[in-house]
Length: 249
Image 1 (cartoon, helix red, strand yellow):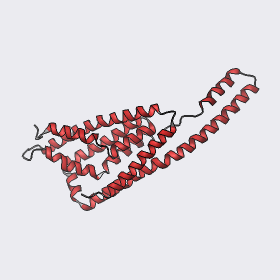
Image 2 (image 1 turned 180 degrees about the vertical axis):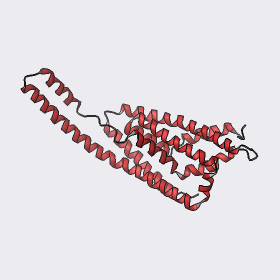
Image 3 (image 1 turned 45 degrees about the horizontal axis):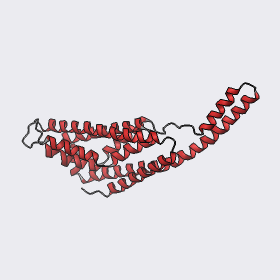
Image 4 (image 1 turned 90 degrees about the horizontal axis):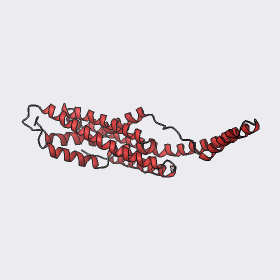
């Protein structure tokens, strides 16, 4: 069919691949935990955009050239490792500073509410002003907006996938197995397999983001747990970066 062979086995292999944890999964879970479900889905979209690049590259032979060039492969490997370590370090360090900022915001908010309550009482205006102040004070913590825009999350997801040399090796070694050597439509066959891969990966990754985001929603009042998860994911990123740097073809 269109130069594609053993298509059912291709679908099964893609499902198993998506179920295997890696940098992409770690990034999606990290964003979902840090910024919520929407950020997780956007990060999945960014990773899928990276898969589109790989699919086009393997379809037109660029991936094989990169894999065959020791210099190009080493450059991508080092760049990808540095980027993963950077993301991991940022998660580890950012959570500490965010916690400190949240504590400062909490203290400031309590002081401001107390001041507003006193001023409201002195002006004789009202019981409602004092009541509002007491309600705000009892809340304790003011929710902070995500520190990274969705556009930044999208771009980060894209580069996390594109700069992963393991993905390059996967595409150049995996896809040709399902394209008939005698086919006169090899490029179209590669593009079709790439499209199937991107769609399946996108659905799976969005599911991961949805689940991770749902768990995060339940932990809104437990910042210590979220901070612990961020540290675990950040450490995993650094470990993946170090492992990637030592990767051999």
